[in-house]
Image (cartoon, rainbow, N blue to C red; front, side):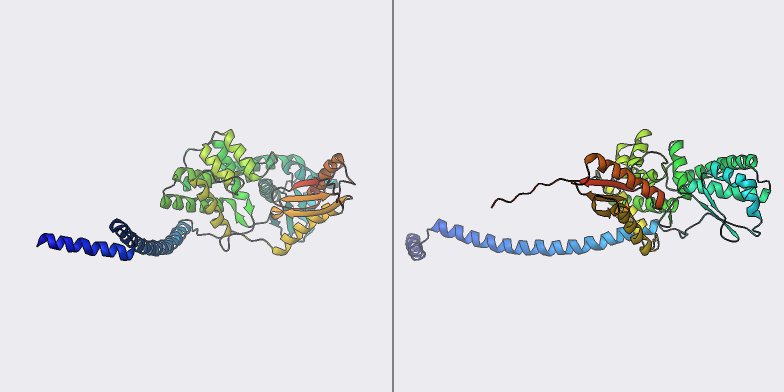
Length: 390
């Protein structure tokens, strides 16, 4: 009976193979492939659905992280503009400030390196690009007015005393900033430099307040993402220190990197400073977080402001200064007015004349314009010879 069944089964299998044109092993492979493809489609659908869920969850989580970081950086004060002016009750005091044949005001301007404007009634205005000099002049002049003894020797004495007081105030401010963000081991000179942020503003945002806010945000982000918290802390704290370096040419990023190398700060921290305006590729996750924290603090509503009309006017003036020179074809103010590109006619100007032109434009910008930071003037002289074969 069993032999008969096996024989019948073999006959039926042979007939099926003949009808289908496939061997038994081929049919088995085809069946397995069909099952595999069906499962693959199901797996792909599951993967796609999972990816969508992950994207939604990641977006929600990212918003929570940033919002929580901003909460850590929230401050209880609002940045304001401060102008170096002194209110006076009686305009007769201006005569004492000027002195005989102007000797008092000349002495004051010489030792403080600020300009004194007495034109407005009931107000004395002090003008200088250096906010620390301006603050020293303001405090010193206020002290001289109250003292009443305004004469060259007394002016020098009061200004010197004021300088030492302001230096102490700046160091205290720098030390307080470091301690508030958890930094307790910092070279004395860097603390003093950070203290200069007390009198430094960027588009209306005080630099100490910006640095404190940005560092708190950066620390919160680093803790959430498992980055090197201490590197982010120092990177945020020192990212703008180049803005208060008084000497050397270059952007505040370049000056900051140079200063930190001088004091042997860690390479990872220097990398954060070097990349916080994307001047170089981000060397680490810490550098990315410093960049993000800086952007959040600077770009949040109410943090900074600049009159749009003044901004456009400054860019236009830069271009106009260059265009009025002979041989200039066109000029473009780029990088928010920090870079002026001047294209000249190579037929009219030689290489040497192009170099002189760059110097002339630089000098005119310095003498006629007020601008934050620095303006780099690049003169482009390119000779192209074109012929068409007929």
